[in-house]
Picture 1 (cartoon, rainbow, N blue to C red):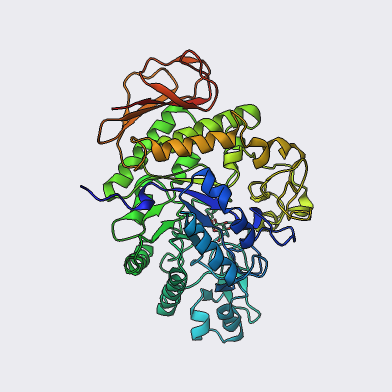
Picture 2 (spheres, helix red, strand yellow):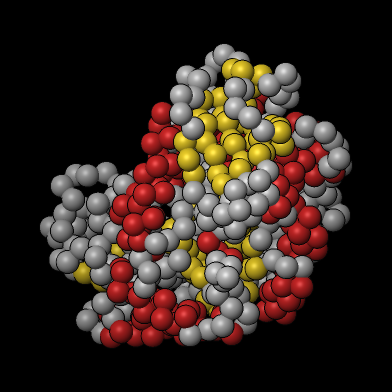
Length: 524
Ligand code: GLC
């Protein structure tokens, strides 16, 4: 008998934006105790693992992606005892825990950077970061920050330091062995505390192009800056893989690498590197049959080439929520629900960002004075940033804070009045609600033999109706599951066999309405 594949090859991983999930202490900001309280909800939802966004000590210039101490919990989020308790309870509930690792940059409040600023140019303390003399009275090169504005800021003595993100996030110098040693220590620290894996932030950014060449006016943006994806990053992940493999229990790491095309992403998941990389190509592809079929094939081929599982992702804390991306309003919701059934029928591992299972839309009308994303400030108030995807979860009740905070405290970002019908409580037990759709789909994914271990092939069925994605998955024993997604504007008649298992909108007499996905089962 072949052994079961490791869990991460087919896991459904739920992203918890800790700041916005559950607030146990009533200060309006989510915390680890709040996540811990809500573990039964996540176990019941039917996911396999949680990825927790950063909860480390941080001045919170970029929502915790500016880490001042990698081995301690920020008081805003709790204590080390809280994370230990959360890991223990999650494991007892059968849930694995993935934590965020931020190796591209530290906070400017990190002791290393404080020491660097207090030390002279050329000193070992400065060499841990990327300090350079300026050029012609300005920064050393023309690089722009992903968040807007120049990628360089000046130290009081006039030297400049590189920050691909906010000025409060100085980039580390991965040419220095001491940086490698420090991150290996941090990995071990969290592995020893029992975490099951790491989400590697800006995994494509750690190594900069030799000589820091000008980009020639090229404007960077999250995802496509040419100074990313240098060859040297892969050696780092090979070392980390060896480290992870030294621990029992299938520990894993997933790369956040905004690179294209799929074959470039797959290089992060070669056998001796990281286990997964987020498939942002899938997220970025328009929800239409031809491009979707193309990206699915390309992703499966590219990951197949390196023997890695494909991942599927529709949203995260950096991107506009799928409901809004796919058209907003009832159409956007219908299409996001269809996309969820598509994603969960694909082979490999899938990510769900908190609130997707409730059908939450991006909050587009946050008042300017509450915006906290550094993108808003650094873009000179021209890009509103990512706060609209980070509004705290609605749990119950008929108005804000919808059970997010225990004592009615105002959440750190205001929730919309129209979320009353979208709370967990309002959707629980409601036939046809998005939450019940996810619960049902996740149960089927675990139980149906053609989906259960995630490894079965995908076969496109011949001659699908126009604008319809139509494929089958099959188990070794011959059970089949057919998934059809109607992305056209006309209803289509199902001409394929099988018993209808689940649909993202009502399917009667075998007619699949527009913007609808459904699964049929043919048991062996
Ligand atoms: C990643 C994070 C994002 C953060 C950036 C800088 O892209 O997902 O939220 O702002 O890295 O750390």
